[in-house]
Amino acid sequence: MSGWRWGIWLLCLVGLGCAAAKTPGVGLLEKAVATNDAGYQYYRQGKWDLAEEKFTQALTLNRLIDRQDGIAANLNNLGALAQEQGDLPRAQKCFDQALEILRPLGDPAGICETLNNLGSLYQAQGRLEAAAKAYSEAMVYARQMPPGPLLSLTLTHQGDIARARGDFISALDLYNQALRLDEARKDRQGQAVRRERLGRTYLALQNYSAAGVYLHEALRTFRVCEDTGGIVDALDSLTRLSLALGDRAAARDYGERLLKIYQARGQDKEAAKLQKLLKKGNGAKG
Image 1: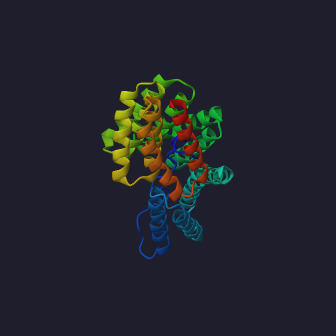
Image 2 (image 1 turned 120 degrees about the horizontal axis):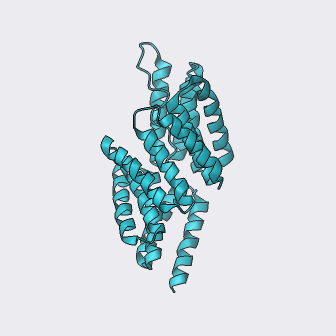
Image 3 (image 1 turned 60 degrees about the vertical axis):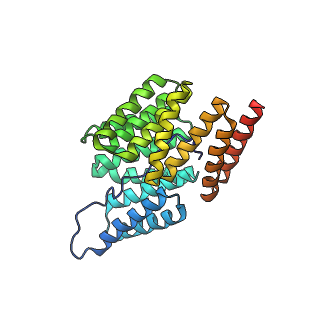
């Protein structure tokens, strides 16, 4: 999937379903939590092979102790990884299995997370109505909990639907609602996600000045957080902004930096699409 993907922030919250208090003698539980967290960090860094290894190990550990919510969390993480790598059928299978586990448990956080993941998968497939339905159901569960990251995530995904439909005013409103929640919680990474989305929307509205401000702020924060996926999104958006402005030098700079990340992550299809975009942009201005 390209940096211009639906901007899906799919990762399960660190430790989701595995955050129980430590119990003396329960070594497998502690190992499952630590292993899942290690996978999460590898995912953020774009080290997908290592992330998959850790998520799979955590899944095995949780299955050994029959920890159902932990199993669902690991499946969500594996699904997120599969989607990032373009394996949509595998992602669908993981998310479906996670939701099947979580619904009987009545876990609003887990169900909300999984529905957001399914919605982003549907959106990546171009199934906007199915995605919107999943996000609407996710919002029901998000509202059952105190305002937090899952509410921000769901508002953002609903903003993505509005933007995909060309309703940029609604998209801006939804992204700003999420941003205010992030600011209240002093969530720097969340703020960067929302600002990247706002920048992308202003780019679509051809408000290039506002787009540039939001995108540069987002990129700076993603770098500090060492969030590879966020850096990819911001660089992709800045490449497109530069092309829209006719600044071929800047577009080439951002594009080449993004290309190196794609190559490091083994995303050959995304790299080829980016090279085609840069060539097309240069040709259009030439």
